[in-house]
Length: 67
Image (cartoon, rainbow, N blue to C red):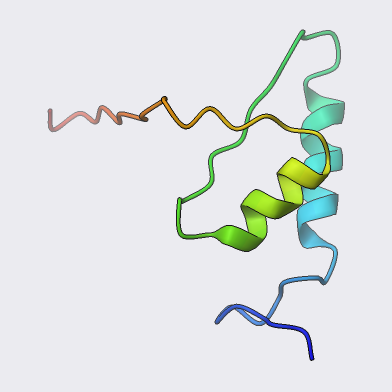
């Protein structure tokens, strides 16, 4: 039996579609990246399975107009 997340969409091809679109949009760029929450093991496995490298030492900061 396959595990699914609470979203009920894992394994439906949405991630592959999004990744394909991002690759097309970044045509001519040397590299790109995606953000994945640490608890989203399915997404991490998906990108690592496609050859993406995880940088665990990085932290993401967000600035808004309120800061």
